[in-house]
Length: 83
View 1 (cartoon, rainbow, N blue to C red):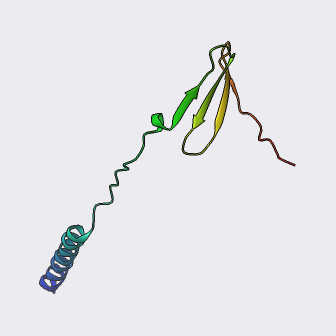
View 2: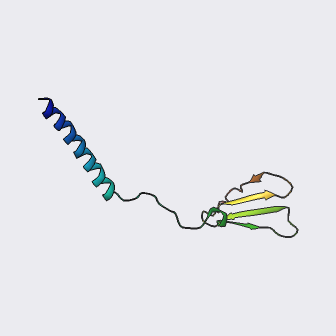
View 3: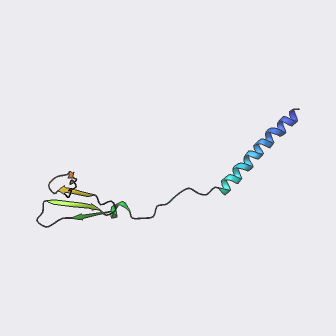
């Protein structure tokens, strides 16, 4: 009786190990590398020579940020609604 319980336990572990090896060999790697434009290349900066404002344009989303040259904060301009 002890021999059959021992063989059953060993057999269960053997099946579990075999299943783990087979599933690991057939599972595809889920590591994805994103190839595209880095975030630093999405923004362009615009400033006129005599202006006190600098504008940042996000080329991907179209977002515009307005900076006052003498401050460390920025103001996002409101959208103008055409009537």
